[in-house]
Length: 491
Image (tube, rainbow, N blue to C red; front, side, top):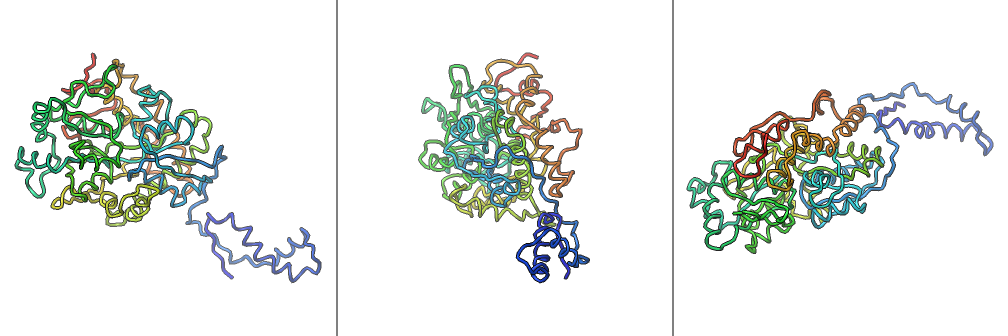
């Protein structure tokens, strides 16, 4: 008999030998009692000359000494919760000895509160939430992240009526496939006319004051000279001096608010832009890929105290999430994403995103629908692993800090070194590296899929923004001062 065992199945070797040895014992032993000598004698008679080990199989997971194995994580019904969902559904959490329950939360504030009060062990968070909580914008409670869930994934959608007005202001937009990116230049006269006629700012929506969506729609508007308002100590809503009033709307409620004309446009993640297209109520005019190519979007966050009390458990969670992100970005030889349709099907379940599979799979499989006549291949609309997307880069944290200061959420000037200090307090690449190194030793990740050992956490300076402005995380003050609209700092 020839038996081939993979390395990850060596733990079953004892079971296999028992299967081979027991029949010999039954034949060779006359009494009902089996002694150690009987077992050794029977084992010696088993022919294992053809027993082979397949060393190409993955090594077993390095089982960590978990402080806690039963975990509860929160999420919002958006497609970028996918790494958490996939880590559960594909058994990656289970491989690490973790029993994880995923619970949807009604909004971002409740999600954060439940992490802070301990009802949740961790959560799918807006990238700005661990930062803002740590420095005390809103609730103050130190939160850390060792894993970035994704790049990109958002869009800005306007109502059909607003889109028609934008087309009148810029006839090039009447093309069935207008040139992208589409700036807010054609929106500016609409905003000004509304302000003059109604005596109040033009209403648009975003998902949370420290969300990427808030900073992205502000960036898009301000790049065209439209003032989205300032946060002050007396105006925590960010409406001071606003030409556009950006109200907080939970993501799943965006389409119905647009249809009811409560907002005339919004910035949100998927599938809620594609939902507006399919419902025939709105037109996405840009994505955040065009506002800032490969921008950070969501993170996995836990309290600092939880991370310190559950070091091994935290490490096991990050291992599972890395595997999930890699699975989501797996491609075939032609570059086609091979697992996204399955991911869309899983995410469509009511206990996860709860939207139709054919809504979710548009963006998830690399296609984005702006209009019926404008369907574009966008393979990087959602990025979960490639381009080191899951690594917690210090420069990503600093970008959010610069926007918080630009718009007044950080009320006082800060020196340049403060930005780096906060980034190192909130972002924990050392935990990511430790998890990745364990996966590399297990054959589940290649060393090339992680930044080099001497990487300092700062992505290269980039001008891939809708306005061509350059961001260098090593110069936060210079970046803040480069904008016409927003706070300025003294150098």
